[in-house]
Image (cartoon, rainbow, N blue to C red; front, side, top):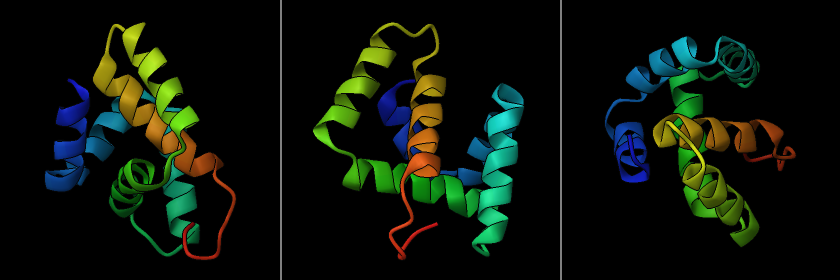
Length: 98
């Protein structure tokens, strides 16, 4: 899966992304569920938010890091999704987001 595929899937089928995340990274899936629940969101809503927030608010450095990881990845789609979710989980609370 390529970057465009991940972004399209986020818009069209976030539940599918959550199932994919659960199978590819159970630990991250658990963190997503816990963080989402604490914010009154579903895991699907959190994944959708993570991808949207990254595409809208990530810095040039964040994008450069993602592109480097994608270049060296055997599964660019998984790498992209994990990076965007990790970025959202690691972002400081701005009051408007989780």
